[in-house]
Amino acid sequence: MSGIAILLNNKLLLDTNIIIYYFNGIITDNRIDEILKTNFNISIITKIEFLSWQKLRKDKVLQSKALDFIAHAKIYELTDEIANKVINIRQQYRVKTPDAIIGATALVNGFDIVTNNVDDFKNLDLGIFSIEVNLN
Image (cartoon, rainbow, N blue to C red; front, side, top):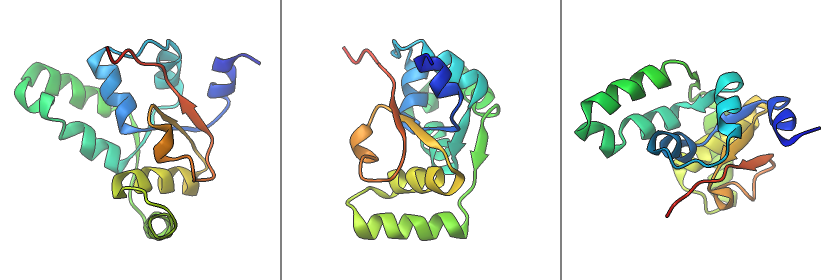
């Protein structure tokens, strides 16, 4: 099975960095297009982080594109079950609250994570897919 087929057979949750890198045009991994077409799931914290990205405040055209883009996502709200999982993650590991929310959202909903920050989620029992970016 190809890498893309494996990705598309899984339920995926995108980390905030993937959305921001996509908007910056620095993702060099063409799998992102397939992922965005078929598995565009995000946590509420990703919506908050992405739409509060400072670059959007300064560029109204980009802000409009971002709002249109995020409107196509399936957004998973913060539930009591997710909050309790966040508490457990934060007690067991040194994970920042936003990453713990994203990780808990994935765990509770049976998602794998698509991220460029593998270390943020490495201790959680998740499938993690890294997307290549050009940070130069």
